[in-house]
Amino acid sequence: MKQFALLIIVLLQILYSQTNTNNAIQYVEYVRTMDNNGLSTCTEYTRTEEYIKNLHSKLQTFELFIIPQTIGRKNLNGTHSTQQIGLDIILRGTQQLLDNPAAVNAFAAAAARLEQRLLNPVTVVIDVDYGTTRFGQPWSSANVLGSTSSAIFSLSTTTWKQFANALSTQNPQVSFLYNNIPDTLYNSTTVVNPIPSATLANLQALGFRSPTENLPFGSAPSIGFNSAFTFDLNPNDGITSGQTDFDGVAVHEIGHALGFVSVIGSTGSARTWDIFRFRPDVVKDSITFKNSQRILTPGPATAGGDHIFWDGVVEYELSTATGARTGGDGQQASHWRDDALRTALPVAERKIGIMDPNLAFGVRDTMSLADLKALSIMGWQIDFGNKIYPVT
Image (cartoon, rainbow, N blue to C red; front, side, top):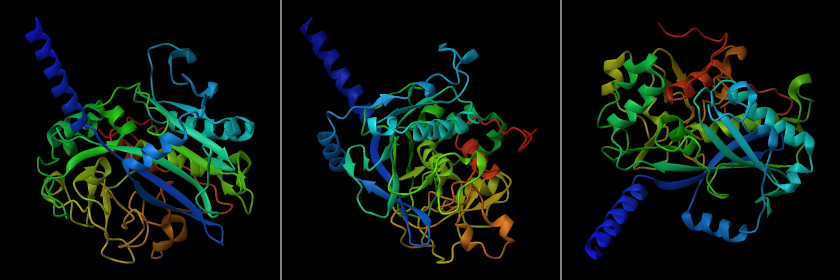
């Protein structure tokens, strides 16, 4: 009996080790700063495990409250049924946020915009705050408009074939693309075959993590906005001049948590969006998609235009710099190419989508077809509405 018990302990240790190995965590934070001209810019920082542990130690007694109107909005008949029919974003807010009902409603409305489009039966928990501090901590600088933290999980025991199969299961209509994700992801770094990685929400959508996983505060995605800046909290009547579109920025930041992340500037892994990142005019069909080099290094062109996302038919330009906005075009790579750099196009055609790295005062920002198509390719089942007909 003792030998049997020891065997069980050993097996559990092996299983625990494998689970941890397959879910190595990296924390990233997207910090949005405001310049003197009212232009806000998104920059990515990698946060160490020590940074997160220090955050936890400071916030052990910090209390969050579930925002009731965000629970179960995508369940059948609007009830709390266990049969969920789409993405359910549950928000946990601070007391200072709850003391501002307009900000609470603005956060809830932003989450609802994504819930209306994403159909995977997944529950994503996001911690949110709005006020003079970020979850009880002072803002790092007076020019910080807000920031978003998200955990990136590396699947070191998952092959690219398994990852491709998970993508195909969610969106079989583009299986011709997923079936040609190579077993060895040839790329521009020195790592021969980087391992798959993605945000928790993206892995939930793909079935690698529980669809109802609930991470503790500090590890769950978190979004905070600095109330020292003037936000327009209700976009329904347009965005007031001199104010920032809260809804647009919030949808953008939730987009990072759902999968708009790139590994550019680091090595060893490739995130879901990176599988589809190439040089312009290289990929023409599923064969060249399979055999062409993925671009996981910044630039080199300082004007940009040298990284594209290929959705199986269309190329979309991407930003090309590291998290700290070094190299490439100076804009962080987890975004579309900055519309200000696409000057060869008519003004109305320059902005690709809400995941543009910058946003100016007085501008209303909404999701575009490109945003939805990228989320679809990353494994989210999308209700395109009247934007696009399904591929047949």
